[in-house]
Amino acid sequence: MTIDLKQLPRGFLPASDPATAFKTYPELSILDELGRDLPSLLHDAGCRDYLRSFAIPLWPERQKNDATLPELRLYYVRLGFIASAYVNQVGQERATLLPRNIAVPLCQACQLLNRPPILSYDGYALYNWKRFRRQGPIALGNIDTIQNFVHLYDEHWFILVHVEIEALAGDILVQIGKIHDMLNTNDLTGLNPALQRIADTVWRQVGVLKRIPENMDPNLYYRTFRPYIRFFENVVYEGVTGKPMNFRGETGAQSSIIPTLVAFLKIPHRPTELTDHLTDMRRFMPAEHRAIIEQVQSMPSVRELADRDAFNNILEALATFREVHYGWAREYIDKHVDDPRGTGGTPYMKWLKQLIDETRQFMIR
Image 1 (tube, rainbow, N blue to C red):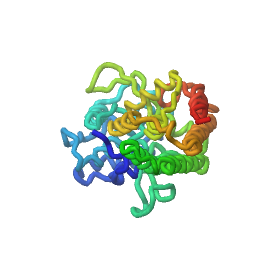
Image 2 (cartoon, rainbow, N blue to C red):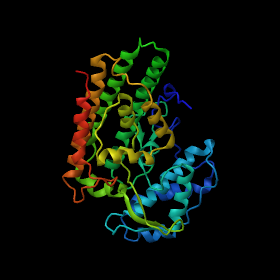
Image 3 (cartoon, one colour):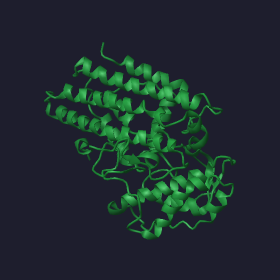
Image 4 (cartoon, rainbow, N blue to C red):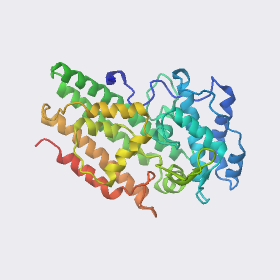
């Protein structure tokens, strides 16, 4: 089935704003209270004892239901944060067993969502925002988070920058959808204007990414909330399996924006451990997002049909986006790091430069 990308003006964000409360099943509202308390609980050495004793209700439905999908996603957000908080509590040794009362409902919800049972980018960012003014934009200044690990606004800001970047990506998908139709009808009249719209949007995303330091301190990021989005290593999910499991942690590499652009532009990245890692990250994306990337990948190349400046402008914007990201990775992570692996579990810095170089090398000369 072909997905009409022109019908996705919000990009990879949900079509309607995320649920912020359990209205269909009010008995689940105790998770909202636990979610609000979580940043305070994590300051207590007895937090894990409290979380182990908490009676977490199972999701009431056996199948995914479109009508209650927003609340199922909220349930996953709450449980995903609780699980990562339990395993990676700052100031404590990392846990190697996720207790039954957390593991079983988390795995049940993630099975319904067709995703691995760990908090990923979708739960940390895509489903974790709300608007102050419902008629206002999905943009910094009009959005806040639903769930956090710490009380510091730095974490809110980190998440919300990603949310605005995701909101802007809607126009990228719409323009790719228009180009898809142009290729099918062999009417390329609007090709270059559509390519220019894509480039303009990526440059706007660069501008948002550059705002990271406005409200995020590098020292606070590394010490306070980054540990909570770390990968799970040899963690037993009690009541689910006795075999230790490993899962990638939350990371922007699980966003579908850059993979979609790379698939559209057909950038030939040389295989490395990082490119293998980025491909593996697709396992942690929502299934419908993986389908979009695959659909865009199957489109014919427009490189030979495009105006050189329009095509190259997208590549330069994408390379600049990667450069800004590389700079923040150095400033916020690499300067403080004692483990070269990122939250996803891979040593990434030495390969990021390769992606930047190969993006620019693909320009039309």
